[in-house]
Length: 509
Image 1 (tube, rainbow, N blue to C red):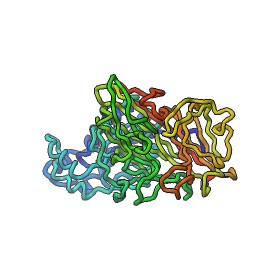
Image 2 (image 1 turned 60 degrees about the vertical axis):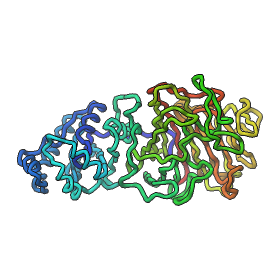
Image 3 (image 1 turned 60 degrees about the horizontal axis):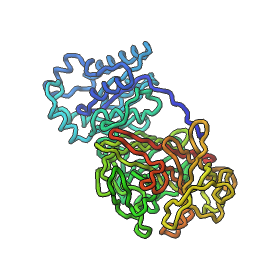
Image 4 (image 1 turned 90 degrees about the vertical axis):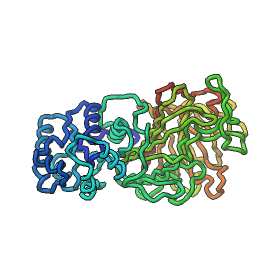
């Protein structure tokens, strides 16, 4: 695996499918608008006989649908032959229908709009003047064969505004979309989260539902509780010292840290002329630690076989009277696991903001003592007994100078590093390598990452988990930023922030 991303072949045509009431027409039009592509609704291809039959309350047969599908396929071929990128919507309930529209057309990407039967019924009940009566929904659901993983669908939940559905699709398409930019805001994906239902989810456990991602020999698991990253493995070898299904989350493993990472001393800070008091969640040190969303059940917004987007709303509460919409996308690709955490201030006043994440990286050693750690940082933050910064010092000549890489030995770290040296592409890379040098993991720190906390787990409550992995925590600001203001982000109303980081293992084939 490489550190630099590899471009994917962009699709030439989007086939948006789903049962009646899923919002295909609206979403298709908006997608075409955002992409600058041609749009066509498959309803326009129905012969009058089909329309009359459905209006009379009779379901179409395969024989009825055959000329309709053939007409859609001809239009798709004309668009492709003319070099026009296009979006076409079609119920395409059965696998055979979708195959007839995609076979021989490699540039066609499938988008499946998923909604619960209850939601679809309620939408159709409120729709008037359409030839498709709501009573036929039952027949469509009976015919429906949901897209399978080998069809490589982009699956997006539809119980959110159409703009959010579109943003979810474009997010899953990633750089392949080439979409016209639009700032994140109240209508962006994650602004009104979707229910965490649908295919791909498994039964709830102490961390809620979970979603498995796969790409080649890689797999990852994301859980509903705190949108935490539970597992990441390559070729069956763990890259993370995570937690198992049915287990509770301890030590912050894989958790997202919003709206601040690390600690706020005494939980008390001043912002906008107000003195605010956060709950003290590290009681023994009299600190507020790791934000407010770790124990919140996030909701599924969009998913494919190799990517998932989940979101939640952080509502005003004691100590943090601000309103944020937050979403995170996890995506597996040829370069490993990529993560992007987006936050938008949907309130009416500026909001202080910081973000981080807490993965524990492993290279398969029993303890991390023999592992080789490289941290491309010029400064270390000295801290007091409560873990709060007391000053910044150069790493030169100290045990914290890990720029050249060395075995950890007995070095105990719960330490923030700043002054990250970045490559020409803008990424800073922390590396943990096996002592024999045959394999390792690059933790890529990208946009929005201003410092990194490294923790060797010496103070974990479960003694058996101590020094089993190294927590490499990308952070947008250092500890206690709510009080010091150092690198603190202030989100104006409507303003957004993104934190990007990733994991690129090597030697795991």
